[in-house]
Image: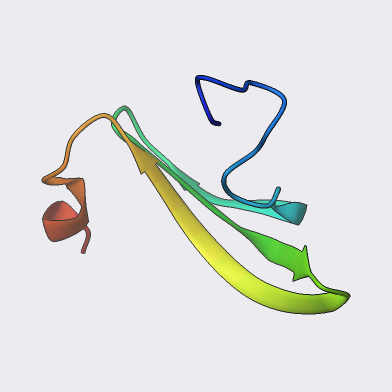
Length: 57
């Protein structure tokens, strides 16, 4: 989200979301973004630590 203009999203929303994984530090989601009438598959990891990606196994 653009903090100076909260109504403007900086990243398109993830649609048709599926929760793939969750633990005490990470959430992994998959879905798709629609940009200019085209769908792009996405997998997103949300974490409270920048080291979480290296800890995935």
